[in-house]
Length: 153
Image 1 (cartoon, rainbow, N blue to C red):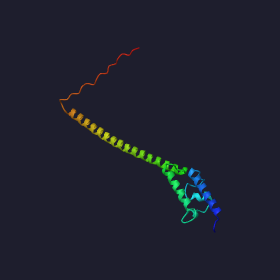
Image 2: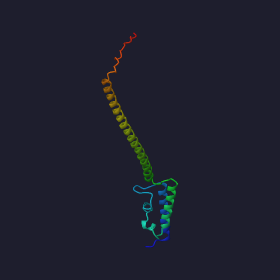
Image 3: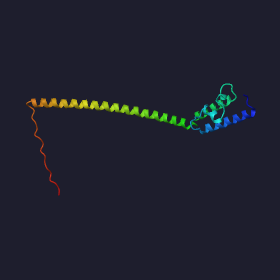
Image 4: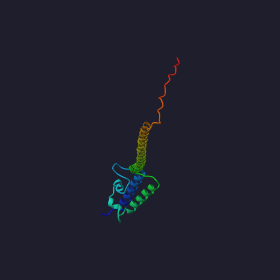
């Protein structure tokens, strides 16, 4: 079925208006800022935007404008912006988690080494005490006296 020039102009105007709304971030519920939502918003057949159909140039214009916005750092679809923000946040959190795991590994290694050193030192002290008790020339010093200092009243 052929459409008249007036109908074609009306469709183009509706597609351009829908394009402007989507690129401003006015996304309908359940839609996105994409070529699938564009014809739904404009009330035209989706196939009219593809191949050698009459509105292919409008789809290409929409894709160019969307890409230009994205390259400029603007994301008209708030959900897309949220996804990008959450992905960046997720990457930061993964990095922090990796750093924390590395730190835990380092501290665990340090703790293991410290315990090994303490055990070796304890064994050496036990050995030296045993050697000291067996040697006749070593005498033990008397225990220090505790003196009570008078309290001030």
